[in-house]
Image (cartoon, rainbow over all chains, first blue to last red; front, side):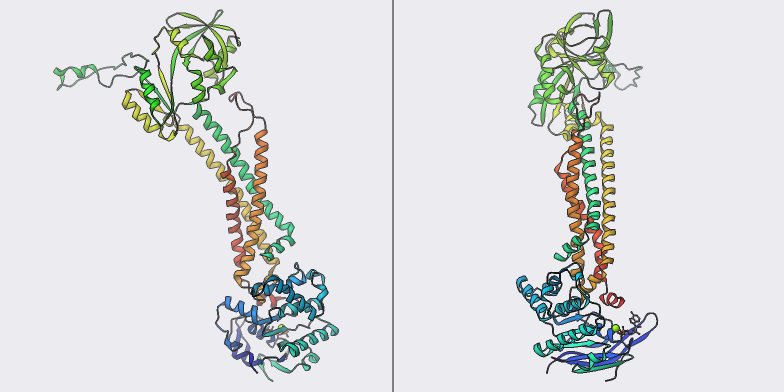
Length: 224
Length: 413
Ligand SMILES: Nc1ncnc2c1ncn2[C@@H]1O[C@H](COP(=O)(O)OP(=O)(O)OP(=O)(O)O)[C@@H](O)[C@H]1O
Ligand SMILES: [Mg+2]
């Protein structure tokens, strides 16, 4: 099995307000089609790690590989491109552009990538929304749908460019158990049917237990 | 890009306020510039059109070479001549007709026409007033110097047609309570009295002039003065290009041995007035546009604060800093373009309105409404300035948007 994401000796410090060693020698790798969850106490550095993995945060020591290609030290335009093409990010708070329709939100990253025609993109976007059972919401404004629905729209958006990996920072943190269940099923299905890799930070023990692999963190160190 | 458009539409209120700022700035600029340059042009026109570009006359001045210098015997001695006085030479231009014909042949010259200046007395009943009677060619004067604009009653054509007609200064007409069609007598300094028929009233707007100045045809004046047909005291030249006036005046002075004064020398103070008015106009317009620019800057700044989350999402989903900057620059330029175009419309509407407003003064008998200069260049400058100022106003905020760190925003939630 090929490796999608790999870190070598990643260290991260916060210098303000005081010098603080958040991440200590993080070594990990995610294989293709693997559904991994990260758990750990609040403040142990899970989100920080995820931002580094997403290539948004570039201030760290160590090396990050995406599809066996060194990402560390690349120009930020190149990073934007990699993020656009290979990484889907789902946040705890369902970040959507509230003035746009659901469909437009989903289409946006594909438009940026510009590999397909507008009709193809729209077709793909509707397709992704169907997969997540929210096809009927396509033309609604993003600000006029419920939290659970927003989260699924965000997932659809993360999927639109058929990325190598989906990173999620407590994507179910704000959802009730029913919606949470729902999102998990969507992830599971994507993983099984399309061989998508997933790395999800969660506080939800039940959610974590159902995944293929659990990474436990404590005070900036991976303990298992 | 579509994002920029949607953003703007979603914040239609702020956007329209920003655009209105530009509209106001550009509209005011157009109005001000058109109106001010219109006024300037009119004032320039008043002076430039009725003033000859080159005025040739024979000046009464002391001879440059005093007769004593002619005595060879005194050549090496020290000469003192007390109280040099001009030799009372004739006011007449020698060879005026050939000189005029010669000047008229010059390609740079639009026309050269003769005038006769004479001092006379106006007599009506028992009143006797001193004044000037000027002999002119009415039709040529009208062609070159807009003479007809100052004829308030009757017409310059009548002056041309009617034998022994006179175009009386309005001040004289008033003082002597004379009107169109009346008879007036003029007397020369020598004492000869001639009856003339009033075919028109002349009004320049300057009381001093209108109180003494009248016009008759060259022939009439020659007859009154008892002079021959080649008696001419002044030649007025109009050029195609006013800039050549100075050098040509110099040229003529040397060539004909006459005094030739160009319009710039004669109206030096006038030029400065025009340029200062232009300066003020531009200073005020630029101030207006800068204010509008700050409005845009402010609103875009607010926009960016409001759209922090959107910016973070865009960046997280793979938009680069440049893309984000591009989006905000687009917004700024859309505001600039829409506001600017509206401003042009507003400016056009306002200037059209001003153009129809009545504006009547004693001084300018031919002007009935406010003068406005509809120069398309002002519109080009206006829209260019709108775009340039919005570009700069948008540049700083959009740079900030470019530099926003998505991690900070997402973490801060
Ligand atoms: N910008 C920052 N400057 C300084 N310290 C920071 C900064 N951001 C986070 N930290 C600290 O780094 C540590 C790790 O933060 P992080 O957000 O990664 O925790 P987390 O594991 O995601 O917690 P949670 O489960 O509550 O989301 C925390 O102790 C936090 O106080
Ligand atoms: Mg966190």
